[in-house]
Length: 266
Ligand SMILES: C[S@@+](CC[C@H](N)C(=O)[O-])C[C@H]1O[C@@H](n2cnc3c(N)ncnc32)[C@H](O)[C@@H]1O
Image (cartoon, rainbow, N blue to C red; front, side, top):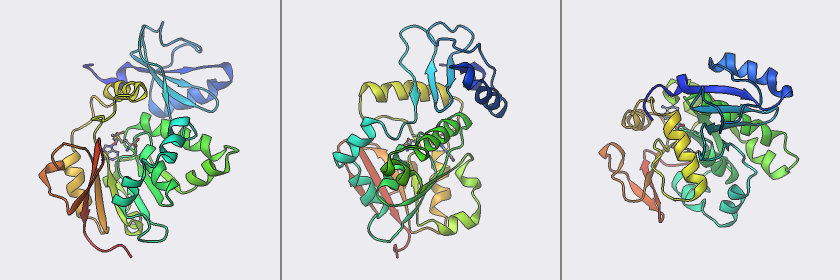
């Protein structure tokens, strides 16, 4: 979808009660608003709507036959299923869960926070960085909803997560001193073809169409920080990012974690 994604995005309050939040977000993100209750299927004045409710923030492409809305919901069934099915072990192994008490991970490409959440669920403290303001706002809303959830497990996991809405490379050096591992998942090359993932990909392709392709720089930056390891998530058969051979890789069916070991974890 060519063009400036931000210029094609608008904010829509889903109810009268959500109007103050919608106004605040419109000002913060510098986005226009469409009348409250506008349906994405009928909207002609934008290519995507950020749908604002009192508690949630969802993004949906406009037009008929477009995929449904995407929101950050850490309590959703698929997050719980992944946990039960043990999908998260490879990621935990790659960052070194169990090698150090309260491992501190700097997730430099937070996105919708799935991997950050998995790492926090495995016991790590996770500081996430997301530079796209709309993605960061969606993630912040998801964290806030989980914080106020009556589900003790959910609230406990997000208590180990924090978010900075900025480029990870602008992080304060004092934050870097506290990190053991930098985690990178810079690309939306998706590995499973489920309907939920296709929906997410379509939205992110729209939203991130103008973002710089600077993942090689990000890896070079990470490798020069005072951390014990840098972990890069890659599609299973892709070449190592920036052609940099990792110390070792943890391989799954669809993804691979390239681990650059810089020091011991202790
Ligand atoms: C593939 S997504 C990450 C998905 C994430 N791992 C998850 O589980 O939801 C990549 C994200 O990284 C963000 N990003 C890329 N480079 C960044 C940087 N230098 N600093 C902060 N965020 C960055 C993009 O805006 C995008 O939202």
